[in-house]
Each structure stands twice: as structure tokens, then as C-alpha cells.
Image (cartoon, rainbow, N blue to C red; front, side, top):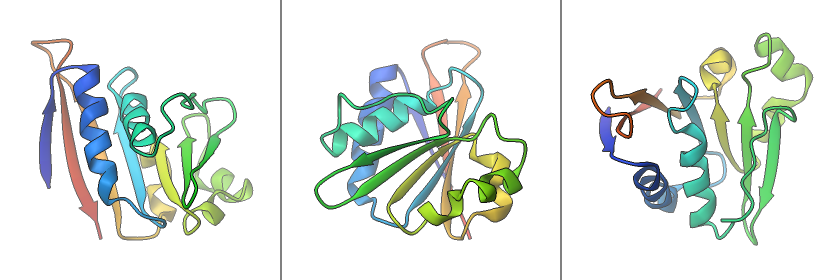
Length: 141
């Protein structure tokens, strides 16, 4: 388990851009944390790494946004509105896992069906400084 302290939204974006250098098809990243904790900023940084800086939009109502690069697909899920993992299966969500990089906001809701290993990043707000975030990165085997 690793921890990173982000001191601003841009810091979170920069961290994600650097983190994205090692991502490949089949990687699953669960983004967990309360509203406004930086999950979407992290996704923005990953997309920027792949040259998709103007593409980010929240998939809150569509459940998944698909982004295509010349050699890699990126799937950005927001499963907040799903009732359970059965609903994720019903929409065919599990078919995305091997097709590209999956970034799943609120992914703790479907962790019971995720293929292992996957990475979980928990975003925690700081009570002393509203700009700071603690990102706890762990591999789930």
C-alpha cells in the first residue's frame, strides 16, 4: 500500500498523468471516496496522459464513457447510481474488463465481481486543509 498527498486539484491531475504511464489494457482502477474528493480529477489526469485532455465528462447518467486512443481504449465508469453488482452484469459492464483500461468511480459497490488483481485508490479529504487529499493506493489480489 502506498500513500500520496495531493495539495491541489492540479497536483491530483499531475499525479494521475504520471501514474497513467504504466497503465495497459486489462488494468482496473477502483476510485473510492466521498463526493468532491478528487476521483474525476484523477480520471482527467489519466486522459490527459493519453492526449484526451478535452474529452472528460462525468458518466453519472450514462454509467460509462468510452475514450479511444490510437492503440488503447479507456472506459470511465460511475456506478454510483447502480443498485448492486447484478445491475452492472445486466448492462454488460464485465465485458469491458479485458478490452482496455477501466476507471471505476464508486467501484467499491461492485468489488465483489471485479477480476483480480485490481488497484483501489481511496481519496480522503483533509480536515485541516480543504485543498489537500490523501490518496491511498493498494493492490487487491
